[in-house]
Amino acid sequence: MSLSHQDKEAQTLLNYFQQMLADRLDPPSAEAAPAQPAVPAAPAAPVSAPAPAPVEQMPTPALQPQPKAQEQERTHSLPTLERSPTQSLEQLLQSVEAAAAVQTEVKTEPETAAAVKTKTQTAADTETKTRRAVQQSAQTAAVRTEEQTVKAEPAPALGFDPAQWRNLDTLEEFQTLFFIAQGVRFAVPLIDLGGIFEYDKLTTLFGKPDWYLGMTDIRGRKINVVDTLRWVSPEAEAREEKYPYIIALGQSKWALGCDELEGNKTISRDAVKWRQTPGSRPWLAGIVKDQRCALLHVQALIALFDKGIGNADLEREFEQSA
Amino acid sequence: MANESAAAIPAGDLEKDGELKRWVTFQLDKEMYGVNVMQVREVLRYSDIAPVPGAPAYVLGIINLRGNVVTVIDTRMRFGLPSADITDSTRIMIIESEKQVIGILVDSVAEVVDLNSADIDDTPNVGTEESAKFICGVCNRENELLILIDLNKLLSEEEWQEVANL
Image (cartoon, rainbow over all chains, first blue to last red; front, side, top):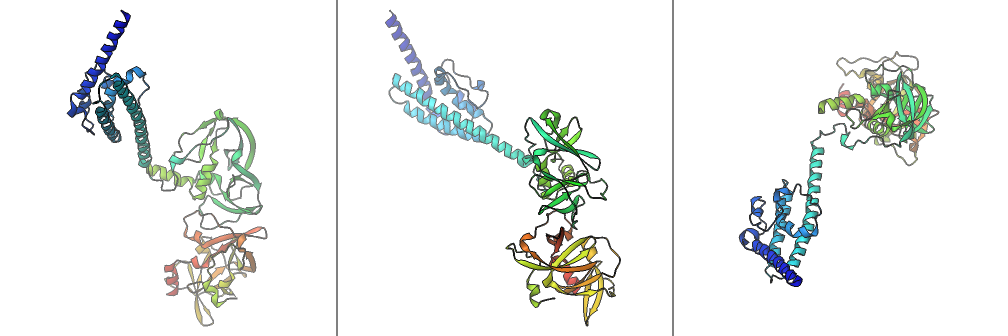
């Protein structure tokens, strides 16, 4: 009895697969036509197999792993990926349909259980390839979209690209130097500094912006000194006396003028309100909450100094682009 | 002091191979400047400069140098520096650029120095002022920085032509 029952089940299963294969083969003009254009109605018509995966139920082109038992049913739903809106995806699916046509030719062989297995395996391979191709296509589309987004931003007339801006990458706790320039307190991460110097003579160079104080020689290195407050705030009054100290920025040739050194302090990242976008002030990494002062972005400052860009230029550029 | 081949050697052509070059230093305002000695013909005490009606603002006037008319440039104005009174140390440096011979008025002339071209550094490329390009480098000299001037860029092509037609 049990053997006879198993035979019946096997026969039923075989009939099911044969029926499904017949369904696939019967409308040859609709199914076997290679490289059909992406028309959503075309693939749904021949689906008559029991419990097919509804084409509308596939939420996104990014296919999820499915149990092996469902893979055969999924072969019917593969063309539903045509619903993807991107053109590259449609082109991709055209190639998938072409692969399905090849698969149809394979199915003209004698319909045995082995053939069914072969078909299932082929369909699984096709689905795997399709998944990879769809993922690649989706990634390509995402990259293109990102590129278009970047291109859509206004061209940086000053040579400063907001898309390239990254805020400071510090440890959870980092040492910060606090200093005062013309009554205004600033903070700067100690690790970004090249030294603090006193200097005797500052050589002024004509033809330079107001914020450029001049050049001084520090141990054989020519250091350009910036009027810190004048750079940040162009409306600040011109400084009559030279700054007693200069704070060298990294290994660059730039230094900030400083009236008073308040000392260094270890602060945590939580103590700073970090900026997420550069806005019109890429030189501002954030605000130190307790001291209520600007935390300077040294690398951005150096880049701006090298290009001769003042804060007034940045604000003007930002207003024009806004 | 001058040499006929001076015009063929641009002052701004700073070689970085450690070659020594001679520079005439002079003072303007609070800073010391240097020009290539090969471009300096002579240094004159201040004498009356005859103004030229309709001349550009940077032209102080003309002088008679042994029968030749030489245009004198207001260097302070050209460099964007405030004007100053004429003193006993004021000098007119007669220089020979690639274009022609002109005079530049300076506060004083100091000395002739030898500078190793490897010690000459560039200045930052900041500022849109036309005068910024006159500076061809800086060099440390006895605990102060000497600003080196490229005289050929002191005037633009049109300005050289304008001065020539005075």
